[in-house]
Length: 208
Image (cartoon, rainbow, N blue to C red):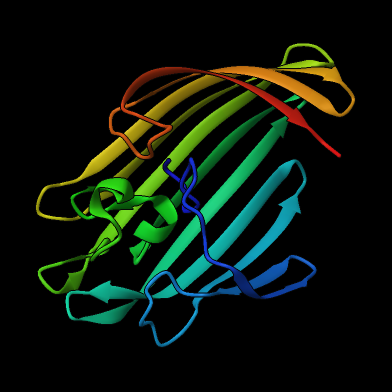
């Protein structure tokens, strides 16, 4: 939560076109809105300046708007500052038609809205802003931890908002196997497996 890619996460449609050249990336996907006149598109550019990595992206999608649709444009910026073995992370985005990416809609989370007029109110597309900040610390060669806060604010009549706080520890048990535990606290239910309130999640990830 707090990023343009949401969390949990919303399942995007099948990829229809993908092109990468150096740091530039273009993606066009089957639109979330069935009657859209153009694909959902993302153009992004990533680069690195010394110990600072950054990514700038622009999104464009035909979003449902009562009986029709309008094109919503969004912009996001993300960065990572490496400090020795540790790193600071931050991202921010703003735009219209962003509910399909952030999973937060006008009036509440996408799971409550069902995707109908997710980005619209009174016949107009509504903008939203999200941001996240995080810190990663490498305790040992095998043990690392992360702290993160994310928030989304929608410019609708209800001033819809959502936020999440999380902390985790991840241990590299084997070269291809990570084991971890995460504490998470969010103020709204975003998905059936991510309810409001506090959660403890145990994970295992095997790379092959």
